[in-house]
Length: 244
Image (cartoon, rainbow, N blue to C red; front, side, top):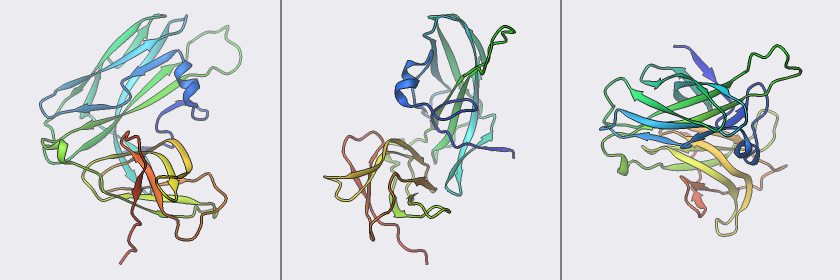
């Protein structure tokens, strides 16, 4: 099965760096909601695209299966979810509704993870000069099983240096539910020293993810905390037990 490795998780410029949140919020293409879930009884979910600019735009919507391996996100081809319609012309100041339609039977035993990739397509303007910047959004979508309320993440963390020797963190999820992490920190969760501010990423059930940290070094025996799944307070992350 073909797969795509993706360093970006959220909002970015095609061919360029990830956009800061304040620039993303000011961009002319807006996508809502920023996370989608489908329950077993649901066959579709709505995604809204809004053109807040002064010129028309063309937008493409695709859905990929979402996996994690070797500490990184991977997107794989899938036919489980189909966007309807997949390509849109959106006039200035207008909205477009996209239906994300499940094509098969739901897995009633476990969460299934997908990414809805929304691309603003370049305008074919022969008079345009210079580089043309376009937006890409990557929105998480989860198909929930029957007992979704009981599926919780079970996280642990440890320091893991990067290949160049700079500090990093490895977070493991041994639970049955996804975990969205923000404000990864070390020290007392009541007075954390935040080393990765803002939204960091997700750890899917049964997976391990790696992230860099904004520090020159970590103290021996550093303990980690993070805000999990939108909770306002820091949650301590137990140390990952050593491999047997």
